[in-house]
Amino acid sequence: MRDIVFTRKSGWIPNVIREDGELKLMLGAGADANHEPRTFTFSISEAHLAVIREDLARHLLLWSAALPLCDAAGTRGPLDENAAVALLDPILLGAPADVDALFRRIRWDRSRLVAHGADIGLLEHGQVCAAMRAATETSNGKRAQEYHADRRRAERGAVLGPLDAAILRYTGQYLHGATVPGRMPDAVDPALLPEVMRVIATAEQARAGMRIGRDPRRGKRATDKRDWDRMATTVEAAVRRAHPGLVDDAVRTVSFLMCSEAADRARNTPMEDDEEAGGDRADLAESARKTALSFTDDKGVEKKWLRDGPRTATAEFWEFVGDRSAGDNEVFTIEDEEMGEGIQLHFYADSIARITTVREGEGGSDPEYRVEYSLVDGIGGYRNLVSTFVRGGCAALEQHGPWIPDVAEFERARRRRDARQS
Image 1 (cartoon, one colour):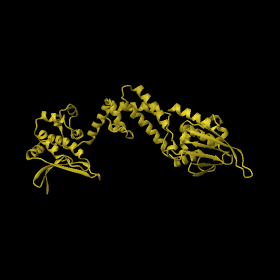
Image 2 (spheres, one colour):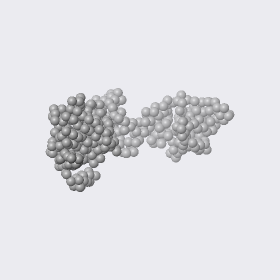
Image 3 (tube, helix red, strand yellow):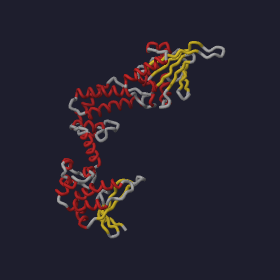
Image 4 (spheres, one colour):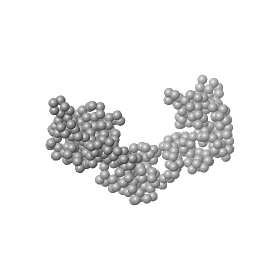
């Protein structure tokens, strides 16, 4: 039979129970193999109970010291009760200096104490008893998260000033640098907000006129990594020039915000509008000679485009790529059967082939084709080549060479390019 003898407002602070006539401290920590919370108990005395009732600080210190023992038990192991009981007298009944000395020798959970109001400066100097004078029963989890975030930064030598911290709070990245940034002015001290906004304004001016396009090779909502990197480099350089006192964490979170916003705009822009922003709208007026095109992928899937359809050929093609592109599907073809020409895009090799019919097949013979290869510089290069082919066919691609007819020579050129980039 189990009865609760003493409990505090916070349900996580260990309770004192009486089980079969014996006083025990009961705490929840960790999880079992099924991810259910584990509960541990170990025996205490009436003297220990008296201190737990009257001294919140000692109660919390005991909890902090017991938690690593629970962690050591894992998902199914038993609590080391002897080690747990050995903590009772030194923490609950010992002199403050002896408690401080004990905490310099054992493992303990700092986050619990910080969440319950511990003075962080005193904790860092090993004065745990003094640090707990302002302890509270209620927990502030965010305070503990910020403490750990500051410790992680300190371990890599990053120390935030007030403006640095305010910028990270504005973008929502104070706690976790991988969090998608946003704009949260309410999270910033009003006295620092004008200064934060000046930094943001510098970044916005730096990215003016820049955009991040989509990269359908990596999926329908993927964006161009090169565009992202160019924008990040530009923004970071401008912010560092205008605000040289900022630490790297603050500068990077501002550039991350600018790039994330630009990428979101690209993802939510219809493909036709995306082309217009990139200067590729000319095919609407110049593609009259292209009455029909056929798009195919490496899996044999085909899609037809007709001139009198509602969308441009390039928009239809890149949507087809975004839908079909995958790690095992990286070769896409655009063919104009009427003109007897086409292009084949090799995403895995950053290359393209243009294919023209030299002689039609006659009397059962196969047609004769001329195949020429060229290297491509990223998704921007692919977009330009596709748009040029749609407007003017293989002849219009001549200026975008060199075009290499010999496969072995082209492979050597590709290897040289890859060696320079590695």
